[in-house]
Amino acid sequence: MVLAGKLDEVPVADILRFEREFLDYLGRKTKVLKTLADTNVLDDKTVEDLEKAVVAFKKEFTTGQGKALDSVGREEFEALEVEEVHQEKIVKRKK
Image (tube, rainbow, N blue to C red; front, top):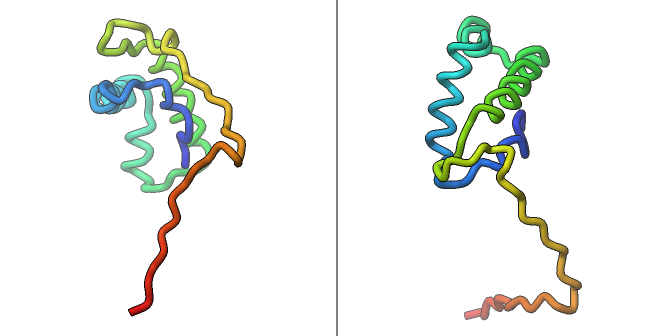
């Protein structure tokens, strides 16, 4: 994936608005969309330009709660020990 992990900070409620505004930003401030339309190829240079655009746009984007995107934290959790995981087993009976 080209942008794997780059949009993790975007709250779920703001995803569609982020997408619309980011596409508008790409059209106004970069040549990424034109390059993709003209060449139909996602080469390394275009990916690099797209990643730079995401970083720049994230600095401008505010969430629905009026917070800057870079002020939104991430929740991190430690993995459970194997003994702590209780999982049901599905058993298929033969007829």
